[in-house]
Image (tube, rainbow, N blue to C red; front, side, top):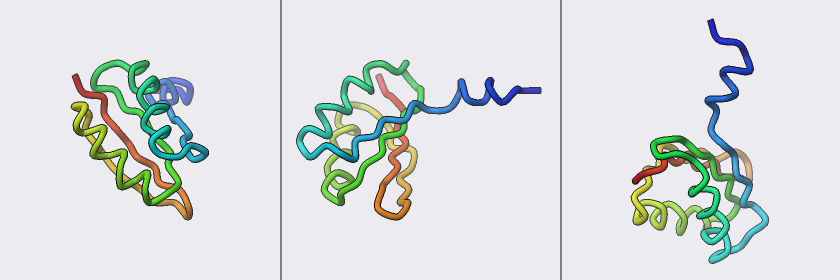
Length: 84
């Protein structure tokens, strides 16, 4: 049986990038990506259509996998699995 705290430990790190603008969104996302272990999930919260258009291809080019993209009102939640 898992405790609530155990579940939270496995939750992806969430990085809010809604106040940044391209190209700074990518620049600020990279240090966050470097801090998580390979194959772990990280959630990037984005706000603009430009961010959601530009960031996923850039992350894929770096070898990361986009697991899901969810839209919640005016925000996008990009779930990324860190690659090699």
